[in-house]
Image (cartoon, rainbow, N blue to C red; front, side, top):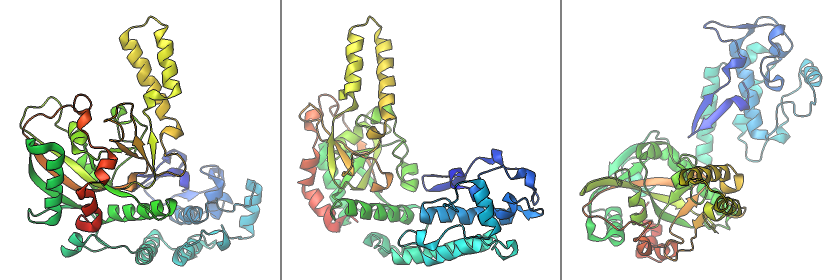
Length: 423
């Protein structure tokens, strides 16, 4: 077990790279000739030193302890060793896998104690994984108590607690403040061509906790200003987003115009265009969008990828060639994918936490916000509505009617929303 084989995706841990291990249904014994399997610095001493009779479960506990040591120190175990012979010598002398002075500030004492228990040289003194799990839950409890945060009042009123897990949707009453506020905003954006059907509040404590921690990070990076906003997002994967949060890599090429990230809009007309049933549909059309709480932080203006020197150079080359329009489109798509693989197009510039899309078109400019860190966005409400008549295409003739981010922040909705009328 080593950190390289522990993958975290959407908050879920997955163990990979079983190709380097011998897996049996019963306890496995390791001998010296298996010592090259895996990474030496994360191996248990009985495995590396070739001791007979070593148990798989005890080896896994040692490896787990080394992984946690790596998390709290940022260093590999026995970090001062420069070779395997040095490592073997350290193990023969029963040296500690790490020094406590290496631990990052704020590391829980219980977690450091757990590392010591897992990485004991006497196999019989190591805890089993059931005991390790119990200790970890105790550590988590202490972290939650130390890093407590306030739940939204509507959640507390419905009996939710910090320790609640899972996800559920609660329908907002039509006489509630948040219902009235969101209804007024939808009408302000899209006029009388929509009928509001239902507003549901997403209750997801784990996801909100991550948003809270990410918001605190934005505050520290941006002089105690989170610059929170309530922005729209439309996706065909609403339930996945509501349960697991956003994934900044999930967008297709169509939604990476300003680089990879989560795209949000201050004007619901723009998100309505991307709603799951928006294309090739008959009216009236039942649709839904997410209204999200976003810690924007410092926003930097970014032009589309098609305006980059690399893309413009491609267009100049194409102008000098006699190639079909299909080939031109293929080359353009390939170039965009190449640009999207560059780190500078997958993260915000240093000193900023989100991006504001700018265009040469006066009205299209500053109508899209791109966030590159998934947990800066919390999907708070699902708004279901019926579109009775067609709206002008917001990417065409309807572009001039889109509200900009500045116009949104000057609105009554924004002032009331950030005053906690919305949670």
